[in-house]
View 1 (cartoon, rainbow, N blue to C red):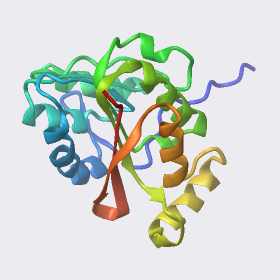
View 2: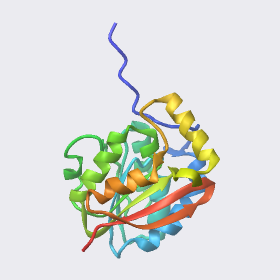
View 3: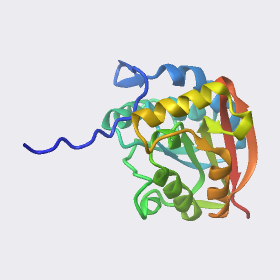
Length: 216
């Protein structure tokens, strides 16, 4: 009997569906706060590439606030891409979702150049090689002066929230290659690829928004 290929879907919560769109409980809570941080930091007419768009709710929220931008969402999950594309049919600037695997060499050559690379709630539910591919690809993809925006939980030594420590244990039980990433490790990774941490912003539920900037 042939082996069943591994599922591409990584969803840690039940998602509802309506009219071709998926709705995630976490996105209902964090799409607004992410929009409020990201939207004012994008330049006029910004070209945005998102890795791991999920339901597309984050892209939708930012594009509704910034109709001048062009946003390309991507995901490995067929259902997620269909959901984001359903939103794209209604929202100015939001493009149909594409499949991008940031762990593969050369993924960044597909989208062209961008002013911003966005990745929310991905690197803790994927192998570390995804974070490495994200940083390496960003060095080619993102224009000088552009930014990388990461959102999610992070480990910060003794200052780490107990809920994030427990989440880290839970993730590693699901998959030993997953886990809440060290902020120092992530910062060091992007620094090695020409991005400096410009802002560390505390978010609800012990998450962080990180803004990395590529020098002009």
